[in-house]
Image (cartoon, rainbow, N blue to C red; front, side, top):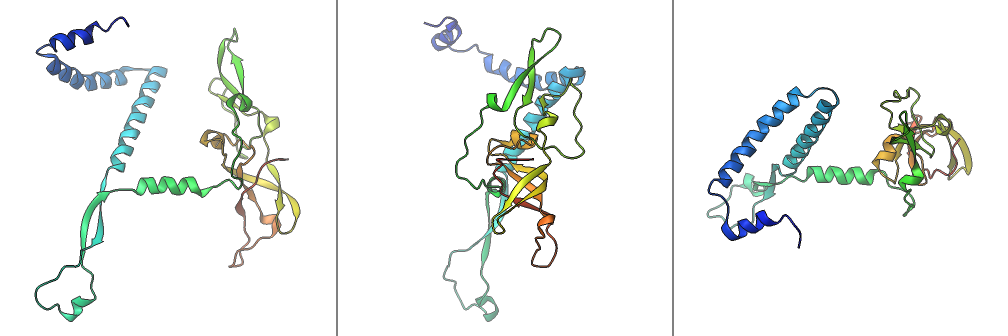
Length: 250
């Protein structure tokens, strides 16, 4: 039998103290002010951590409220037999009523975002974290293990500058940073060496997409102005999203 269940057992047998719920309510009411005072007094990294936590809670609360927000929509009134004659100008007019329904706009946006960049191949083998990152030991005694080195090909923009070593968690080696990609045109049956503009979606997750990691199944945006593609209006296409399975990048 687990030890330390004596409080629950006592409550089951004898119930709560007469002022238990009152004290609990007052304690919860005071907690808000205590947290606020702590957040205002905290300095340095502690203050940053508290601010980050509070911001995450606030954002979550806002999202929840937005999801349950009621928006007014219009729907048709059920056909009812009306007494008396209806004027000719009202014959074609549809009677509508405004109803309150739960807003689904956020869910719809998420669905659209998820389906925007689809990988052309149905299943891509997920890359394990151990395979993607190499643990880098740091500190005087090499005891800290919070740094990670990316072991796959990455893309960073032309104005990229590395962070100071103290703040750089993910290290992208310069030897694995690529700016050009070999893209094969399906109709011309030719391969072109084109500039990469950005990484649109990595199937392994949003973290890899933000880091610009290019693994099998990654969709990248390339500059196709060299191919001479034109729009129906006659404008030269500058950057087009091409579903490109990265096997070989230069």
